[in-house]
Length: 310
Image (cartoon, rainbow, N blue to C red):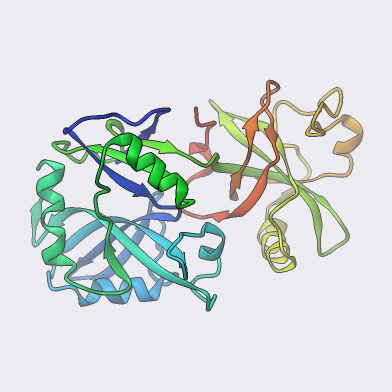
């Protein structure tokens, strides 16, 4: 179940508010087959986050499915999507999982129960622990919650109807999200090489129907280590065909985001499979990103499902 993007949080006693964690959404499954961690596009994350899997294995129920978010926390408690890329190897961050829902418990399907009844079961399942945690409600009115979350430097807020059932696979108006920091996933369609082992910029886009539309160039947010890692994953995807339907541009444009026919000769194109999380200031009138910053690669969503969020 996914949340719809809104410009203002709904107000009233029918709603509860939670932190919008900046990490990987995941289902945590424990049953007779052991423990599995599945991403939004059903990829296996179990070996990628072994400490989370071990924490799930230690909980009391023999059969349970939890919905949550895998997050990398800095020492001050703030989530960092960039740190999450290192699979818990960074000493200054801790990988944890915040569970916010329980869908199945000891053979019983709970998805048709109200959200508050499902959440009421979490404390008995997750009694204590440093890795597996409960994503608790945020107290206060909508405006108070937004102010507190914004001042903490956290990405956003999720609002959920207290009586909502779990609508698997749906982006429901019973769950909505307010983003305080503009960022989303983009499909990487190419890069401008800078020698054999480096690149100057990534070219990213979003799907409109079946067409991949160019959204801009990303130059910021890379360390030498991250550049090498990204390039290693892009090289097997190299192709001679430009995947963007709206290139070339006639000119570079006001913010230099355009790609002219002359520029295209310098670009190494890639199959539209790898995703990047990008923070940006705004969409321009031309439909391009302004001041785009790379945050990390994503492996928990299919490229075809990446669209411009609005």
